[in-house]
Length: 171
Image 1 (cartoon, rainbow, N blue to C red):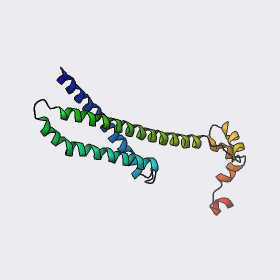
Image 2: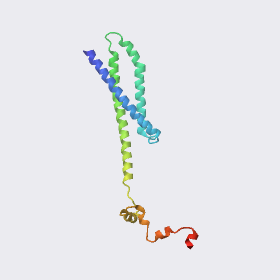
Image 3: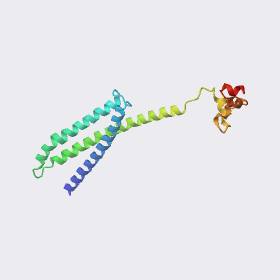
Image 4: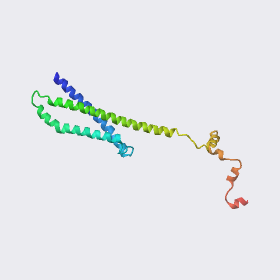
């Protein structure tokens, strides 16, 4: 029974790590696209902190999986030795904490960016119109069915109907 419990723990930790890694990968790709488009500057402290923490996490992952794990698998082949499972569960819990922290700071950073964008957008929409020179014109036009009817003044039709041909004007 203890063996099944340990196996379930390993499966659950692998599932959680896989999910966290895929979520963080997607969020990091979004940040990278924003960085490449110029929305995030390379000198932004939070962006640099996020990238450094991601590099440390990746380094830890590669050191354990590619460096330590093969040696532990050789030791664990001996009967009654559970070094691999204990080591993996300890490492997985540590990595889970790191990934949770990384995920939280990425999401906080993205939330701050979204709030800043929303504030800029609301500022653009709530600008006060200070140039009031055309307000009288707009008040006159509001009641007209067609916008440019207001320019038709009495007597302008006669002027518009005249031709530019000098022979016709003499007649």
